[in-house]
Length: 330
Ligand code: SAM
Image (cartoon, rainbow, N blue to C red; front, side):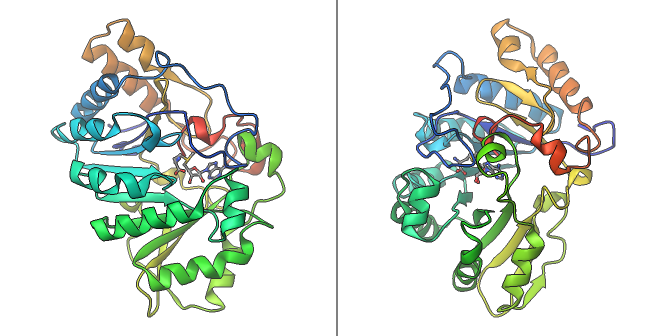
């Protein structure tokens, strides 16, 4: 699956629900977002059909996300069904970790061994505040359980927020020093809720890096800022067990190596996080499109991928994007 710019598109992020058990202040509106009804979101069989069609076209990698994927009933059976799709080489999961302790073993047994956990603070009260009521202890227990069960790698995704967690950068680095985790700092993208409530809170990755290198020596991991590794630039902490990564969607976009499509819970295929065009696969499925017709839709989405965000990912462009990440899945 090559797009117009000769990029190989082989990765699909699938949001299986728009519901979440947290309400992070930069991700979802306080008053809650209109939650879609049962019929509005894709049934698991429908997702499996889309993935099967895309795998025949060259898809090799799926990441399950949300909302919060662990709140959707039946997701373990869904993973088992995904695993049966021949040709699909890699399935991973992104979670906020609240329910991870309960589900880690079953997720692992179902065949997922790579997991990303979102965690923006290591301070109980701050975590409670940013997530609108989340329990940090539950997440930490979940991460420990994932480690015991054998997940590898375990990636901790931390959105850097000025005035909120900039004083915790070294604590997160310490976590990567003492544990075999990859802690990745992600620049806050001013889209949706982040654009209204956190418009002044963007922190460039370079500042975080400066702080970290004041205490730790970072060694760039060769080959870990390429398409296969995703958009993060990864460093080993000298003498430590884990790694530190930086994902810079604002200060340095990574469109040239973008290999992904996104499927929303309500069946819209998106060719770019920041492009408003959507390809309605739910409608196609429910109007009994053949596999060939579905494949044509997928191809259309791929061919619509822009070379890069319209304005090379300037803040002005990002601000035009009104979607919240909770509806797309990150
Ligand atoms: N519930 C799951 C979780 O917490 O990982 C999956 C969905 S969540 C929307 C995916 C990721 O998007 C989280 O790491 C979250 O912090 C991140 N995110 C949400 N809004 C963002 C923004 N404006 N800029 C950068 N990352 C954002």
